[in-house]
Image (cartoon, rainbow, N blue to C red):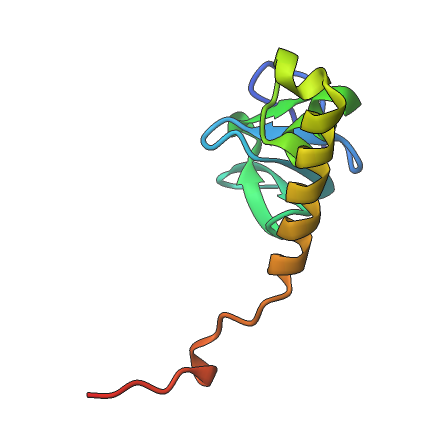
Length: 111
């Protein structure tokens, strides 16, 4: 079974891909094929994506998307030490916030 991206390139487990719908990126955990098409499971969402809407990307672009949210160009500001420090702080803050429990079980509302 061959799973191909939007440009016809083969997607394998461990490949880095970008979802063309939102620009988000992830690593391929698994691939499968069924009657409805070919699919790749992405680590960042743990969801299956139709491979027609995925695009293989290289390691450098993957890291830019994941760390900076800016897939294909680096601004002049990001090249300065202060800008790099700001990006690192933002990444650390994002990681801290990922563990926050946002379930509705903790909410008590009036009404």
